[in-house]
Length: 374
Image: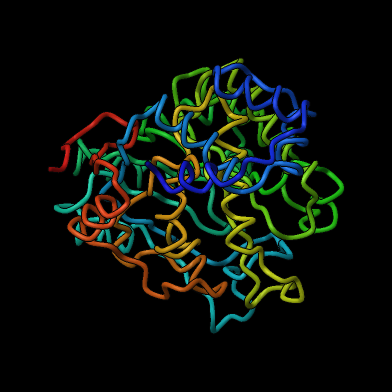
């Protein structure tokens, strides 16, 4: 019996007919509405939400828990935006960095023998555009043809493509032709426009973020989706974010995974906000798994959550743990994450997954199984 099952068995006070109806729909793998999701979130106890989300997780992915051998290549912390939640953007010239094409290739060369994916993101550099990146991507792909290149958030893509003078469709096609395999889900933050105006008024709109991912999906560039939670947003705004993603996935079926990203408060303009509790984190993962019925995978990004909470989320709808990282990301380290030098060996991944009664499965970037652990 899983942890949620043991806990849910103690919750015998379910006498709410509306909640009973929602539970029945979830257990019969029927889609729930936005209003039903809100009622579930606000009325169900955590053990029940864990139980329900775990049922869906096991229906979709069994006991498999996926991980990947990867690095996160962050090419600059210079950025034209000043997002209130961001701890990554350089505040002084002395604190800034940017990698040259040679520097990018050097990092990949150093790690190439032990990875099958490179995840490339950074700040929106005011001077770099698509013309810088196309030959870099081509060089990576020519040198390491089996290495999957997942690169550039929608905010980065919008700037890189438009600054180079291309239309979105043409820019995406050029990126794909030169080696781009998929795009990450960053930059979505929270889709509510009031929140966006308060927290990051110069960033691309939710409508533009969605349009970029839709355009990518149409030319067979898959992507991930994210949501930044735990700042000024409400529960309703979180759920509306999920609803918008579910609608787009109905239309394109181009999202590989959904990743809830926890707001971390250190070294940014929102440091006065108390970070969400572990209970709240687990509720977000659980409701995401329940509501996003057309997403195959829910990912817990462990460098942001911390290992303990991330692996606990395996009983609350999560089936993917991201990757080995190799101490190549500082986005959450600078925001106060527990793991200041995030890296996890394959052995550690497998051992921790097994401790949580799951089956470790090494995957590639599009969730084809590579090696099943024993």
